[in-house]
Image (cartoon, rainbow, N blue to C red; front, side, top):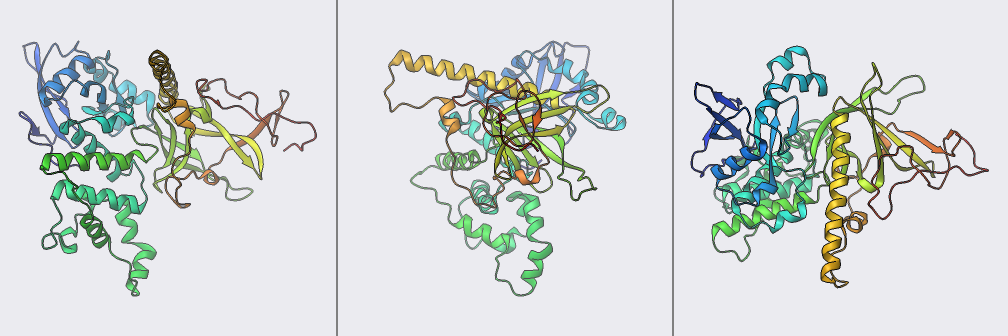
Length: 467
């Protein structure tokens, strides 16, 4: 994994292997290794490993890293392997879940039997999916900020968080400042970055710039700067502000990196693998399948093209209905239903996501919606109790409905519904029709009922043509 050295903590060592239980013996205590996002290992001696809960192990990790109490909310323990990623609940017993790992892989992945037998998970200390990102920038502890920065950087560099080129360069410049120190024109030159760009920019982006038409244009005398030069130019513009001590400077840049990542709609998501149908290329030829990554967070659901590294569809919870189906001898499907149009006429759109992880996705969507409702209700009670003034913060549901910043039309953050093979329909109460306006009830019963304008379905109207 990518990431800078997270040394400086007593008892931290680097491990190349990913076995989380490294030794056994006659005693009741075992040597356990918990990994950070940058592959730094935290070796621990754990009593009664077979029965210890994720909550108790989390406390031991926090003590080893000397993190404050707030880190219990910020981070969670995950079981991670190349085949599956699972965030553990506090009541889970990591050792027992590890013993069940092969069963989980058979249930939730399409991996071969040989791959499943050889796969072994590691316990990782990662960001908690349910921690609100609005609280991140309120954190003052440098170690927590650094860990969150490391994880965000990993997701950007690995392409899990697709970014526009301009944003990648700005984020890469902050990585340069955080890991190389202040810009030095004598030391930091284009040649010094040759072969090292993958430490600052996503690998897929570097490949695009160094191949295909871009290289052809450059070979004909194009004045387009190399990534090395544009990265250096952006690095030069990073300022430390009024902060004097290096610790405060680092905290400032950690926050700036996180704040830029907060503009990515899929920041903080748990990711699942799946495929969707491609639009048909001709009348007789089916389009096949496209591999996607499905990100789910407290904000919504995001479908990302894993090859092209851009967003296909992003929906807030109040914009969708969903369901999970698994007919006998057929594939597991996560259905997403949302508003759209067909040649200018409002319709309901159904997107089918084929995945053995559909059950996990559906459960997480439901939990996030319920948790948002509880959080909003608690906030409303607090507001009522304190007789909040009109200038106080609006409830979550109002914030969710606001439009974000305007984006470039070609931005990787824009929805690409035209790239989706959806089922378009309206329901008039008797039969499914193709094109009808107005909304009453959803094809699916599962949806968020806590927002001001919950999703509803297109209603048939007399006199309009059927599809």
